[in-house]
Picture 1 (spheres, rainbow, N blue to C red):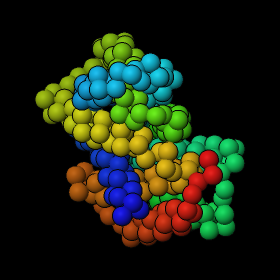
Picture 2 (cartoon, rainbow, N blue to C red; picture 1 turned 30 degrees about the vertical axis):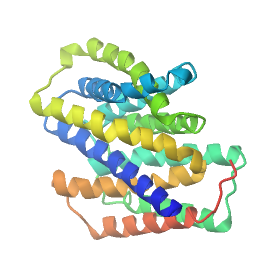
Picture 3 (cartoon, rainbow, N blue to C red; picture 1 turned 180 degrees about the vertical axis):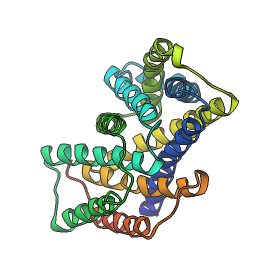
Length: 281
């Protein structure tokens, strides 16, 4: 039952992560909102939803305020949105979680996390599945947007790594959102000349923040202590596959045989990596 519950929670978190990519791309592709205002509303709505966690856990109020975590969250959220102006949903998710994978695997190995033959094979298979989607013939992403998304991925990796140390997932996530909001708003003010929004853009931003971000990030923080860095990063490789399916349904993107084979390779690789009973970190 414990393993089943863990699998269900992880699946829900990954679906929410994929939803964020689709919601952001929907908002920006249609020109409904600019990326800085989208990020600010996303973080603000998430912070408001999570505020009760801070009031319910006043005893741990000082320990949950980690400025670096708030900064990592802001950098991820803002660059994620800016990069998606010129990236397809699937390509953006690939770049994002490819960077996450690399950073967290290096961190896990540096900290002495075990990488058995089975786990190494699963990791290579999952990465190969991602590479299949980037073979010649796929639309090459713009360099500047690709770099921004990679930096966003490194920021998310740093956020996930610091999250493994938290003792109170709800309060810590709430504090991170609260600290990230002012920084994101400052960027919105600085770019106000290029700003735009409409009702649809605001609705998508709020949905992304209050639903797909707030709840999912608390859930992710609760799961991280049970997962090794390598396992956590590899599991997130399922997000690009889910994002591509979301792109097919909501953005009219085509589903190719290469996408299907890629998804299968990634999912099988994830199963292989997560076969290890206990992480050593």
